[in-house]
Length: 72
Image (cartoon, rainbow, N blue to C red; front, side, top):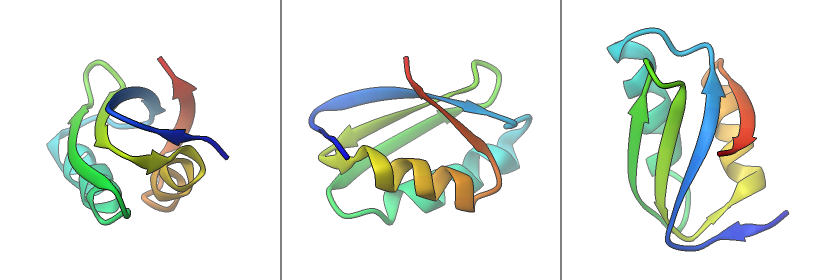
C-alpha cells in the first residue's frame, strides 16, 4: 500500500452525523503517523494529516462501519 505524506483527502461513504464523524476520527487518529483528522459527514470526506498508510486508513474506516471510497 502507499503511504501518504502531508494532507490527504479521502472519500468516505455512509457518514451522516456528528457521531459518525467522531467514530471515523477516533479510528484514524489512532493510526501511526497520523497527526490530525477532520471528518465532514455532509461532504462525505475525511482529511488526514501526517504520514499514513492508505491501506491502514481504509481498514480503519471499514472497521468503523463506513465505506472507504478512495482519494479525492
